[in-house]
Length: 264
Image 1 (cartoon, rainbow, N blue to C red):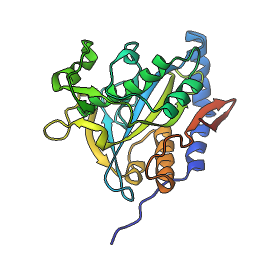
Image 2 (cartoon, helix red, strand yellow):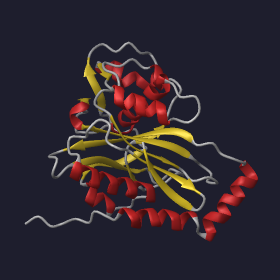
Image 3 (cartoon, rainbow, N blue to C red):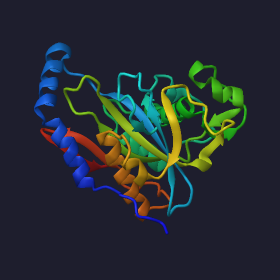
């Protein structure tokens, strides 16, 4: 008999973040950071949620950050990282859908461009490759000499963007030592064109890579925003198993002392 798994409560998870933001320790940290570093502009980052298995009982790809890392050591996370300036210029076998592209361009900070939108999605694909060895794309000759994309060239895989959907966005609260404007993308494992022998070939930043139920991941060592995204994922899959292009994407950002949610 299948036992039920905890699926979390979105309001409770957001309350956890607001409690953290307004705690004396974090308020003092924000003050000290402002005094020493001034205003820190959020850096663009991208994260990929890869889905595998049946729609009524899916698994997602997650791994634990190396315990020797300074940022979130030991935490269970989705593959992801900072956007590289070159990412937007990488060739693709297919482009973002018009709906996803336009949503990214309309919501980006500063001077938004199509190249910038491509860069966000390409960064998610690159980070999955670096941290797990899974290459999202199609088999073909890949004409790109950038060292960060060398594995795609060696394996004869050209990145593919058409299977990616915008899932969510979250901006680190002001005053923190590190701030990221993180874009979460979601795709099915069927978008993967190459799987290493043994399933994974990590670069060392993520350990214990696994396909895990979202409900099980919530009970693990996950940070606040990861838990919010896990609850959002569980709720979305209940109503949108096919990952509809254009489905409202939650956008989490700080307004005063509140962690505010709007939609893209």
